[in-house]
Image (tube, rainbow, N blue to C red; front, side, top):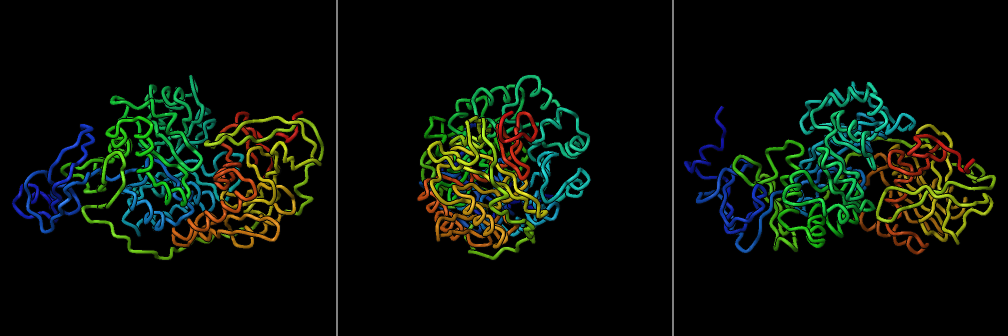
Length: 552
């Protein structure tokens, strides 16, 4: 079969477009080249002297291949896929590798179908890694269970490229048969292995897992790189690992390193950016701009075998962004398949049905009886890991504002079940409560507050609106409804940003830590150490078991 762009590549017929005068970044050589190039049918056909039906004079600017996010949960932006795309395309991102793990935990296979369908409505390439662990662990009870047979139905679908983060590390090491069957479905398998080291890391990699985005220290990242893993340098709203991991990157290791945002709220995307923000921060931290750009483009494409993108080269997609200066990296324009991306404005998304069946707890349901040495979840600033703290506590003395020990509550959203109670240090609230239906990974309703009445009130409002984020204090209440499965808003991204900032400002006036809803959303995540709270109560991640609130 003759490729339709061969004649244009040979100069025998005009290309669709010619771009001239700019300095073009070449990630193969990590160098800049002032050159002209031609595009036909969405692909680069050649460099040099070409004729085009449309010509762009880009003199004085710099062109960089379209930026790629190597691992992201779109749901964590709180935006529907179409609105997420509007926002990140403006920042030069043309491809994201998305794990629809969050909506799959709520809606099951229909949630994955929703993300694929919605993603197809946008110029952004949303390439899906199928969620490997729904639920995250055998102990978790969310809205769905996905087996290998369930995932097999999506294999071969356009836009599905592999298996997402395998977070059930004990299952991998024990040779869990269903998990093994899932991994056998795909050649590309991402990992999730915080703090894993030594022989267990060897076994995990030997099982066929190729990457990790959970590194928080340079030593951890270096060990995983040396054992053959791709390392995704993560910078999200609360997962701020970029600065600590950058010393890993040099001319030799850059091909094995790429950027990922994982979980980044809409306000951070709007205010700081996306992968362009990672590039700027990397350069500001001392990394050579060319190595940062390689990580943001060709390295990410190479990790997933996406040989049709990641560079501007003959035969590859004409995805690129125009920037004013490589180090300032302010994106002026974005082109997808050789066509400039023009924001078409807001289009209301279709939201999947995901009703909440939660039973709102009464204050007596969430009381703490007894006293003694209590296990307290310690928030780690700039991380989603927690600390396993121990404080002498009298249940009747909670909240303990002097020591910043507050009550945390997780309410089953699916089965009108009960509520689990824990203690947390680091939120800083002096009054009121916050609650939300975004609670990795099962996405039950989670709350932290100063008084039981406010906690119950906040949970009740989340249930009443069918999912969302809530701050309550006195007679004041601030709300962001999340109509799409209790995870994403149906509003335009700019309105979501405004409402999210209003929530955070309200919480800040109550004494809260910055980004309180992102920290809140990870309190129940049972696959990242150390201590968590679920609808069952306190969970010790390292012991991989439920434990009592008071040490015995």
